[in-house]
Length: 193
Length: 309
Image (cartoon, chains in turn purple, green):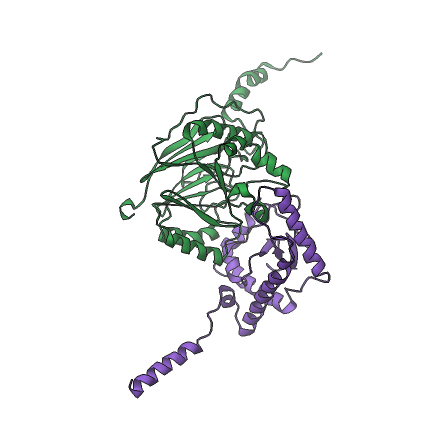
């Protein structure tokens, strides 16, 4: 290999290694590096939550015809998670800094070109679960109220969640729901302006 | 002593009111249908060709009420199964309304479809906004394998079952991978929220449409089923794809289809229905049956771009 060719290859390799990891949709939506870091930290905390809390289940839900067993397993998981984090409170995940970024990202989305169809999609929803949430409590849909579907464009701009956690919209509130335990992990009031 | 009504009023009572009731069995906007169930017709009027080796299934949506109309539809399905012998049933979501206790599953699913379940007919559910996802994905008779979205194949037909309540980038990426890898002749997607509809209660989910249509067109999805609106619709092909809305197998919204809407080929919003489908080679045959046993729609669709497949 000639010196010139060696230099070219080295430069190309250095450039490739220097490329940052491609950001997710959510990170792309956030405007500054500090916003992106906050959203990335939120994602990591969510992953840690599932790794830690869902390990508390005595038995993971597996397909069965026995609905009572599934209900019992879910309640056991919820009881275990509630006991494991007795001091959990609103803002643990949607910390004041993270909350500000979430609100900013959602405001930008709703005021952007996609805003009209997202609002239409939300307006078309059936009356859902009440928007009064309590951290660590069972999700307030015990009487079978439908849970509002989250428009795909909204999910694109929010940080990715691991399986077992979901975002949920009720009125203007964005909730973080433990879907496996059917429990409120945290919520952000006035997330959608 | 009671006064006798005047003659014109009496005339209206005797002649006009029965006429109006015959024309409009439910008053416009009335969501409460008559409770008396029409008896299943004694001889199913099957309009499918029932060819040897074909893939046959039934479609229901928004069914899980546990009330008389769901049971009537289930009885019709049972009657038709005797002749059609469909192997499975696809469910467009809202499989269980209200509570999700063991008793709810019993009265809203196991009892209505007992005869079919006993015959080994499989049900493949998708999730609606009224469903309790974590319980239902693990409920074995729904064959979801613990997944919110999944795929299954029957001979030359691949089914892509989506969770339209929560269409994450991960689900879209999964769908793209599965569509890309499918070599089936027919690719059929079903999920709860409609991309196109003339029904006025919810309307189409345009946000979802913008995400799904590029994938459906790119990878050659042939037919899409959805529910959510409590009516039956056969939509004019959109970007070459056939669309059905089957969302009234338990619930119903009377007279909910907008008259001014021009994308419906057929719309039916005065009784509950279910569908029968048969795929044979490049042809898909369908028949939509009301709980009275009357056929409200039927026809034949040809595989799009069949030469390329």
